[in-house]
Length: 317
Image (tube, rainbow, N blue to C red; front, side, top):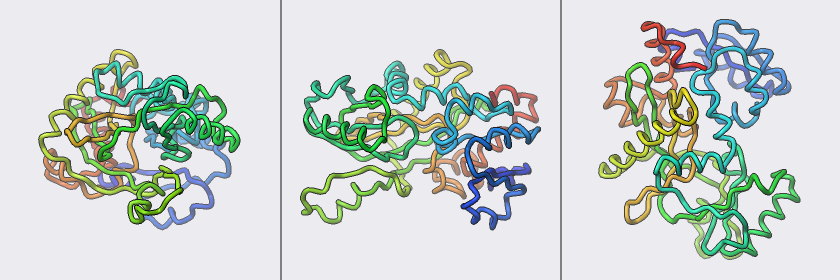
């Protein structure tokens, strides 16, 4: 919304009533508090001439069914949200793009190396766990079922744990300018796996992967060739399989190994939380724009340019 105001748009926020601190920000023109997510669709459909900007919480908590009931335009490809919410569809799309991905295991007894077990949806790593053998995988999944963190075992992804530095490459596909931009890079700060680094001698505390913050990063330049190659391949695949394809921000969530190989273990098809680091632009966005350009403002700029060129229908669905 900050970026939208800089581009001359009126803004409105739909928020949970308990989060009243949002009302202190000057760049929000209208507020719509709600008690339950069921109210959100009715509020949105009553706004009239607007564009919805989706993010992780929008996808996770509103749900695919409710998103399908939204009648106002959504920036980006709303059909991509169905794929993003399913871990196995998500990895299949990356694999079809010819991108290096970690090995997946269809059942616990096939595990022959360290793995990370993931839940469906945009949960910010909550409930993920690592395991070294089939027995640990079985026990972890049983615990998830008992805590009702997952309904169907089939929804769980068992994925090879690739050792390296996590780097989340934030990208933007511009339909108006016909190019893909690298808008920033971040590293997720996760509890308690990052906290355990401070006390490496602690024994018996299992690592967890709940995202609590984000750290800025800049990649060595030799890695960027692979990043742009992956982005182009992914864009081409999405355009073929889920037309009209990628629109606006997306993220290739990756691990860089000591051999400088990049493995992509997930993607996000919309704006991600790590972009909050760059409200006044990242080292990369400055090279494209030579002015402050957050991803929020970049979205608003794309909408503004689309309006000027009578291309709005190409950036919303």
